[in-house]
Image (tube, rainbow, N blue to C red; front, side, top):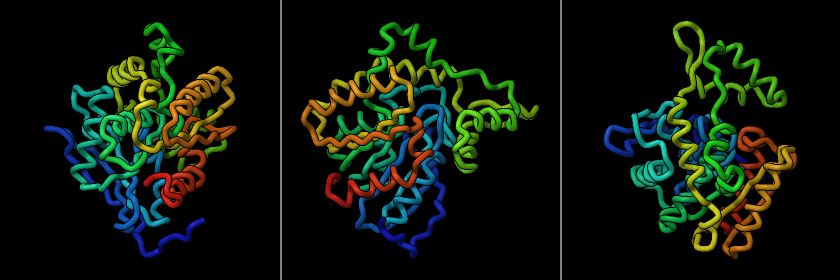
Length: 295
């Protein structure tokens, strides 16, 4: 394991970066060695930048500049009325890379974030040196749910706005009893507390479903044959046979395209691999740079 570069300040600097008229994204920046490849970390649907904290610290300790972002409508970023679709997410991320003057960063995205970074790399290979799709970005949703109504029924978020923060925390801990207190705190940051003590998701339900619709309409399987950017797939086997089978089929399509691609499975592994196994994820990302895979 690479020794931490102790001269770097580990505490991130919080910034707001304008990516569109009237829209600023909240980012957490850890500045590293200018000669090292920078990383931009992109969270999943209804998530936030804090889920990347452990990975960000690991990459930063290896000397990299690391930018973790809250996407539009998430975390502490602005939440305009429109723009909850894949095209806008890609445009926001590309604008952020330009505003921060990052030179060909490595993009790592989890779940929906994996779709965003893969699509950006496919559209603008000149802008990035590599992408990592962390349990996301590979499966065509429409193959699992041919009818939109089925996808909607399965992926509509649960109603949690009757819960207090303590009740929500208890429910989360029961679902992931092996997760650390820090990981639980990151999950809780996906919500805000109302005056009456109940919680509400930072991403509204209508905006959540707008993004789901955009994902359902997207076909990542069509990107691999013409992708010019090295891609690292980190996939989770959480014990759901149907989901794992869908991921393996999608992985096979990606590998068969013949591009510069690596695939690693976490078995068992939670969908939020970056939160469950930050050191291993960080090692794989930093190693891909160190070994010249991301070049």
